[in-house]
Amino acid sequence: MSEEKEMSFLDHLEELRWHIVRSVVAIMIFMILAFIYTPWIFENIIFAPSHVEFPTFRWLCKLGELTGAQEALCAKPFHFKIQSRYMTGQFTMQFLAAFVIGFIVSFPYVFWEIWRFIRPGLHTNEMKNSRGAVLAVSFLFLLGVCFGYYVLVPMMTWFFSTYSISPEIINEFDITSYVSTFIALVFGSGLLFQLPVVVYFMTKIGLLTPQFMRTYRRHSYVVILIVGAIVTPPDPLSQMLISMPLFLLYEISIFISVYVARQRRLEEERQAQSDQQTA
Image (cartoon, rainbow, N blue to C red; front, side, top):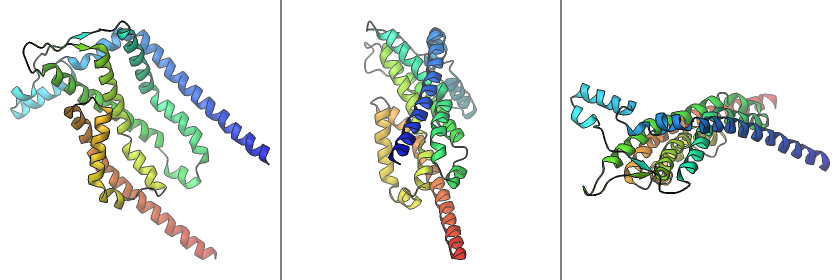
């Protein structure tokens, strides 16, 4: 009997190993492609938010034209210069950027592999209620990535490129600082946008209730501000930019928790009635 349990455990480990191997292979494939096309990626993706032709700045300018606030919302060309002050700076950032891009592109597949390993251990009702989990998680992650790329990065780049305490100081950023900030904002946003999914599953297993979320709403806002400060560069602007959508996600998560708790209560009532009829 113990041997069967040991073999069953080893079989699970072997299955998990292959899920991990396939996920790593997927990441490596896209990472290698990103590494090969690094010049194009840096020019058209990573450095793109530093130009006034970036879509975000164009959209803001159109909004300014419609509202009569063109002077305030239309970004003027700003000085943006990148330098590399470390011998391995460019190579290290190329490798890091390629890895993160490879992970972001392959994220839906990686999560699908993880879900394939977890799903057989769920009960029938849990499988039924968790349909679309891969789609929901992937959508929220990519939505967070887009928010970080199209909102946080251009706003941060414009603000710090134009910010000056003295005309004698020239803003020239190191490649390691810019790429690290870029990755923190984009990748961090993708992870933080998973809040509704976390709330869904925690409510589903009874670890979280809507009443708890409402009672500790203010405390949660403080935690969100702290998390925003951790995953973003140490400045108030970036902290608020990433915290505001998280406040909205928290409120949406409360509605999700209400819905899940109601469904859970109805299932428990139906199960109780079924047990009474059986008895």
